[in-house]
Image (cartoon, rainbow, N blue to C red; front, side):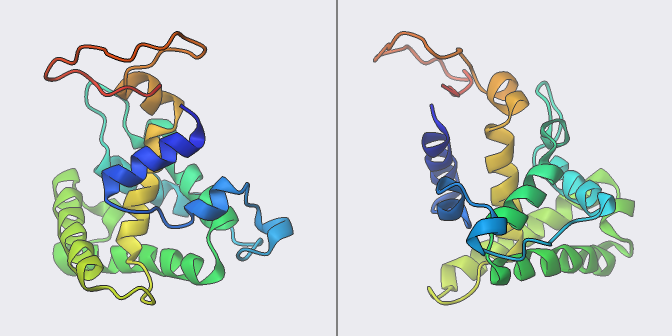
Amino acid sequence: MNRREALSSVALLLGGTIIGAEAFLSGCTNADKKIGSAGLNFSPDDISFLDEVGETIIPVTDTPGAKDAKIGEFMHTIVRDCYDDKQQKIFTEGMGKLNDASKQKNGKYFLDASPEERKALLIDLDKEQQAYMAKKKPEDPPHYFRMMKELTIWGYFTSEPGATKALRYIAVPGRYEGCIPYKKGDKAWAT
Protein backbone atom coordinates (compact mmCIF):
# COMPACT_ATOMS: atom_id res chain seq x y z
CA MET A 1 0.00 0.00 0.00
CA ASN A 2 1.44 3.37 -0.94
CA ARG A 3 0.72 6.74 0.73
CA ARG A 4 -2.10 7.56 -1.72
CA GLU A 5 -3.87 4.29 -0.94
CA ALA A 6 -3.32 4.75 2.80
CA LEU A 7 -4.68 8.28 2.63
CA SER A 8 -7.72 7.10 0.67
CA SER A 9 -8.36 4.38 3.26
CA VAL A 10 -8.13 6.87 6.12
CA ALA A 11 -10.46 9.24 4.26
CA LEU A 12 -12.99 6.43 3.93
CA LEU A 13 -12.76 5.80 7.68
CA LEU A 14 -13.57 9.46 8.25
CA GLY A 15 -16.37 9.53 5.70
CA GLY A 16 -14.88 11.99 3.24
CA THR A 17 -11.76 13.80 2.19
CA ILE A 18 -8.93 14.82 4.46
CA ILE A 19 -8.17 18.52 4.77
CA GLY A 20 -4.82 19.31 3.18
CA ALA A 21 -4.57 15.91 1.47
CA GLU A 22 -4.28 17.33 -2.05
CA ALA A 23 -1.28 19.41 -1.06
CA PHE A 24 0.29 16.44 0.74
CA LEU A 25 -0.10 14.14 -2.24
CA SER A 26 1.56 16.68 -4.51
CA GLY A 27 4.61 16.78 -2.22
CA CYS A 28 3.78 20.03 -0.50
CA THR A 29 6.21 22.27 1.25
CA ASN A 30 5.39 25.85 2.01
CA ALA A 31 8.94 26.94 1.44
CA ASP A 32 8.63 26.72 -2.34
CA LYS A 33 4.90 26.41 -3.05
CA LYS A 34 3.60 29.25 -0.87
CA ILE A 35 0.76 27.06 0.44
CA GLY A 36 0.68 28.53 3.91
CA SER A 37 2.92 30.29 6.37
CA ALA A 38 6.31 28.64 5.97
CA GLY A 39 7.39 30.19 9.27
CA LEU A 40 4.58 28.56 11.29
CA ASN A 41 6.20 26.66 14.14
CA PHE A 42 4.65 25.03 17.15
CA SER A 43 6.44 25.20 20.46
CA PRO A 44 7.42 22.00 22.28
CA ASP A 45 4.44 22.70 24.58
CA ASP A 46 2.12 22.86 21.55
CA ILE A 47 3.45 19.55 20.27
CA SER A 48 3.00 17.98 23.73
CA PHE A 49 -0.56 19.32 23.77
CA LEU A 50 -1.26 17.74 20.37
CA ASP A 51 0.33 14.48 21.54
CA GLU A 52 -2.13 14.40 24.46
CA VAL A 53 -5.11 15.19 22.20
CA GLY A 54 -4.01 12.38 19.88
CA GLU A 55 -3.43 10.00 22.78
CA THR A 56 -6.97 10.69 24.02
CA ILE A 57 -8.31 9.83 20.55
CA ILE A 58 -6.09 6.74 20.12
CA PRO A 59 -4.88 5.64 23.58
CA VAL A 60 -2.42 2.89 24.39
CA THR A 61 -4.19 -0.45 24.72
CA ASP A 62 -2.65 -3.74 23.65
CA THR A 63 -1.27 -1.65 20.76
CA PRO A 64 0.75 1.58 20.85
CA GLY A 65 -1.10 4.88 21.21
CA ALA A 66 -0.88 8.09 19.20
CA LYS A 67 2.01 9.42 21.32
CA ASP A 68 4.08 6.41 20.25
CA ALA A 69 3.54 7.56 16.66
CA LYS A 70 4.73 11.09 17.58
CA ILE A 71 1.41 12.45 16.43
CA GLY A 72 2.11 15.99 17.64
CA GLU A 73 5.14 16.22 15.34
CA PHE A 74 3.10 14.76 12.48
CA MET A 75 0.33 17.34 12.98
CA HIS A 76 2.89 20.15 13.13
CA THR A 77 4.48 19.04 9.85
CA ILE A 78 1.20 18.67 7.97
CA VAL A 79 -0.27 21.93 9.30
CA ARG A 80 2.94 23.83 8.52
CA ASP A 81 3.66 22.28 5.13
CA CYS A 82 0.29 21.31 3.68
CA TYR A 83 -2.39 23.62 5.09
CA ASP A 84 -3.03 27.01 3.56
CA ASP A 85 -3.05 30.13 5.75
CA LYS A 86 -6.79 29.89 6.42
CA GLN A 87 -6.59 26.24 7.46
CA GLN A 88 -3.54 26.95 9.62
CA LYS A 89 -5.43 29.71 11.40
CA ILE A 90 -8.43 27.45 12.05
CA PHE A 91 -6.16 24.72 13.41
CA THR A 92 -4.02 26.94 15.65
CA GLU A 93 -7.03 28.86 16.98
CA GLY A 94 -8.73 25.48 17.49
CA MET A 95 -5.99 24.46 19.91
CA GLY A 96 -6.98 27.43 22.06
CA LYS A 97 -10.69 26.68 21.64
CA LEU A 98 -10.16 23.10 22.77
CA ASN A 99 -8.33 24.34 25.86
CA ASP A 100 -11.09 26.89 26.54
CA ALA A 101 -13.76 24.18 26.15
CA SER A 102 -11.89 22.05 28.70
CA LYS A 103 -11.70 25.00 31.11
CA GLN A 104 -15.43 25.61 30.71
CA LYS A 105 -16.46 21.93 31.01
CA ASN A 106 -13.97 20.71 33.60
CA GLY A 107 -12.75 23.88 35.31
CA LYS A 108 -9.20 23.13 34.18
CA TYR A 109 -7.10 23.19 31.05
CA PHE A 110 -6.92 20.09 28.87
CA LEU A 111 -3.47 18.98 30.05
CA ASP A 112 -4.58 19.29 33.70
CA ALA A 113 -7.74 17.23 33.15
CA SER A 114 -7.97 13.54 33.99
CA PRO A 115 -8.03 11.01 31.12
CA GLU A 116 -11.77 10.49 31.72
CA GLU A 117 -12.44 14.26 31.57
CA ARG A 118 -10.37 14.57 28.39
CA LYS A 119 -12.24 11.71 26.76
CA ALA A 120 -15.66 13.14 27.69
CA LEU A 121 -14.63 16.55 26.31
CA LEU A 122 -13.44 15.09 23.00
CA ILE A 123 -16.63 13.06 22.66
CA ASP A 124 -18.60 16.31 23.06
CA LEU A 125 -16.37 18.09 20.53
CA ASP A 126 -16.76 15.20 18.10
CA LYS A 127 -20.55 15.44 18.33
CA GLU A 128 -20.25 19.20 17.79
CA GLN A 129 -18.08 18.78 14.69
CA GLN A 130 -20.38 16.09 13.26
CA ALA A 131 -23.38 18.40 13.61
CA TYR A 132 -21.38 21.27 12.09
CA MET A 133 -20.19 19.15 9.15
CA ALA A 134 -23.74 17.93 8.46
CA LYS A 135 -24.94 21.54 8.05
CA LYS A 136 -21.71 22.92 6.52
CA LYS A 137 -21.86 24.60 3.13
CA PRO A 138 -18.97 23.97 0.71
CA GLU A 139 -17.59 27.46 1.27
CA ASP A 140 -17.68 27.16 5.09
CA PRO A 141 -14.39 26.43 6.84
CA PRO A 142 -13.78 23.00 8.39
CA HIS A 143 -14.28 22.43 12.10
CA TYR A 144 -11.01 22.55 14.07
CA PHE A 145 -11.66 19.31 15.94
CA ARG A 146 -12.34 17.48 12.68
CA MET A 147 -8.90 18.60 11.52
CA MET A 148 -7.26 17.31 14.72
CA LYS A 149 -9.10 14.00 14.58
CA GLU A 150 -8.29 13.48 10.89
CA LEU A 151 -4.62 14.18 11.44
CA THR A 152 -4.51 11.84 14.42
CA ILE A 153 -6.05 8.94 12.51
CA TRP A 154 -4.07 9.62 9.35
CA GLY A 155 -0.77 10.04 11.17
CA TYR A 156 -1.28 7.04 13.41
CA PHE A 157 -2.25 4.49 10.76
CA THR A 158 0.52 5.61 8.39
CA SER A 159 3.17 5.50 11.14
CA GLU A 160 5.37 2.51 11.85
CA PRO A 161 3.72 1.70 15.21
CA GLY A 162 0.22 2.11 13.77
CA ALA A 163 0.86 0.12 10.59
CA THR A 164 2.89 -2.68 12.18
CA LYS A 165 1.31 -3.03 15.64
CA ALA A 166 -2.32 -1.91 15.26
CA LEU A 167 -2.77 -3.31 11.75
CA ARG A 168 -1.54 -6.55 10.21
CA TYR A 169 1.59 -5.89 8.24
CA ILE A 170 3.59 -7.85 5.70
CA ALA A 171 6.64 -6.15 4.28
CA VAL A 172 6.45 -5.39 0.58
CA PRO A 173 7.24 -6.93 -1.81
CA GLY A 174 5.00 -9.83 -1.16
CA ARG A 175 2.81 -12.03 -3.25
CA TYR A 176 -0.73 -11.13 -4.19
CA GLU A 177 -3.45 -13.10 -2.47
CA GLY A 178 -6.86 -12.06 -3.73
CA CYS A 179 -8.88 -13.99 -1.19
CA ILE A 180 -7.75 -14.17 2.42
CA PRO A 181 -10.11 -15.51 5.07
CA TYR A 182 -11.19 -12.97 7.64
CA LYS A 183 -12.20 -13.97 11.14
CA LYS A 184 -14.22 -11.67 13.37
CA GLY A 185 -11.80 -9.71 15.55
CA ASP A 186 -8.86 -9.93 13.11
CA LYS A 187 -6.89 -6.72 12.61
CA ALA A 188 -7.26 -4.90 9.29
CA TRP A 189 -4.37 -5.06 6.82
CA ALA A 190 -1.83 -2.24 6.52
CA THR A 191 -0.40 -3.63 3.29
